Image 1: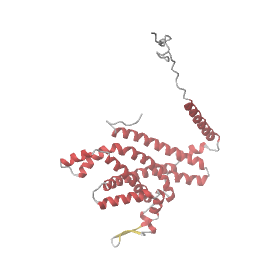
Image 2: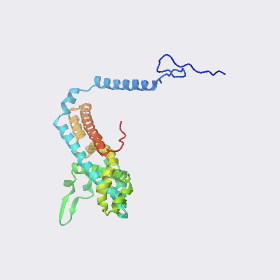
Image 3: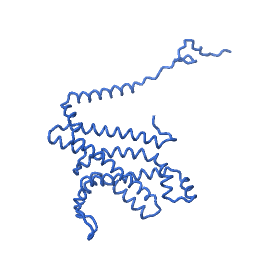
Image 4: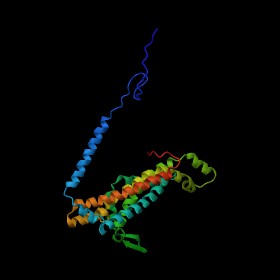
Length: 289
């Protein structure tokens, strides 16, 4: 009785198997086609900017102009203070949402519902025109201020961006708190730790691993959202660029200047976010490659 066996490969070819079949590498034609199309599109964009009616000398001239630098500074300052306000409110209302007190819980849910349910630009306009509803602010008979003197473009922008951000951050913080094992809270309560102490020393430090990535993305978005404040006369970088091109007519050049600075700031923040995530993810898989 004879059996048919494939002759072993004697050629030394690593692509051949012991059965005599040659392994043919898979041809990724889709990848090559996609790469070619992307390169073609990039070449077309580069050519359009190269031969288009763009005065690059104007871009270079205004890239570090005083007005642009002042707008950039205002953009960064506003993003930082508005995000700080948003994080503070987010932590506060996240704790309130998870409270056993029905009044606190209902109030926090109402805050989140309203500020997530209305457009940000509408909220900015409402804050900026608050004097139409409340002509004065303060306690009658003790101290009062004209609302138009208090709600400046800066203050309206801060309140609009910060309070709106707080509604979104509250949900992020709540998700982070829920990600912490309930057993740790119960163990801390068993040894007599108060709820605020448990939250500060045990829950929030561990929740930061979940909180940092989305909050970092929100901070980056906040830098760009400050551009909406141009509608209420806040002098951020885009409004200042618009003021210049209204005067000299070089629209695309000034928009390119603004875009360059936005990209620079966002790139720096993205690097900072990366290292911050690494700091709070020690001992965990980061999911980055």
